[in-house]
Image 1 (cartoon, rainbow, N blue to C red):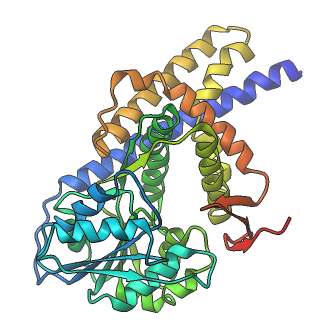
Image 2 (tube, rainbow, N blue to C red):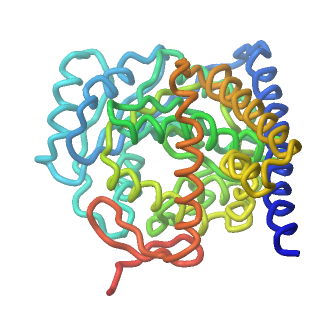
Image 3 (cartoon, one colour):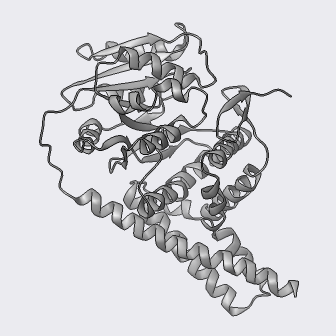
Length: 385
């Protein structure tokens, strides 16, 4: 009886996963249709403050920051903040600012944080000095094109919109593990986001680049309300939705330059992300078992003793996985998806599934060299062994 139950269970996971892939394709189609809709700006453009929290040297930091000084928008300022005055990231920011003498920019020293989330501490310091009515929060590893602010501002023409979050195209470094992670972000993670906003009004934000109306931020308690959350971006979107604001997924894509990581560093990063996701949206986390069917499909012929139907199911799953990768990674995000990267999909999906299983257990994470414990609601506490 167990011999029949195992292939039936694996087949069920593959079948539901294939149905999920079809849903991804429908969600991607909706997104692409929305991106084709003509946008006209009807009113005066709002003033925007771009907030760039910095922490230490990054190989491409100068290029990333420079892209924000070259934004094509009439009323914006760039604010950069680091914890210490001697942070090498601030030195790079000063050099970049000197290349754009006509820019409106401020470089701030936020000081030592008095909360677990140092990024939120820097955001609060920059927001206190910001003049714009819209705040665009963008991580230091994001590279923008000149149209970013204009596209974001169009979404805020609707007064009901409180938060806008931008999709990103992950650009890997030279390591295999970086390439695998970028492949997962571009074809797996964003598939999930597209499906979530396809099925229900969006109630979360994605942090590498998001924008928030300052009045909305004030209404949900300011940055101080998120000072001990690891996923402050998710919480900002969730609280904005609870307060009656609309959270919108922009159709404008930015680049996420994720750099190169060795295997251990990459696994620590992935596990932190998974444990954070499990705390932020536990129901959705369990649902991810169906959102990654390719590893199960590869096991199905073995579980079903090579039955013909199992090979047919494997073929259908492979075809749908490739379609999702081409549609979400290629058409939605603009990833070139070179042919040789398709051969890495089974490796990436298998690694992703293993990290998902690992994320079911434990609450300890390592973030910026310090150990924390994640509470059930996603708050950070100092780890005490």
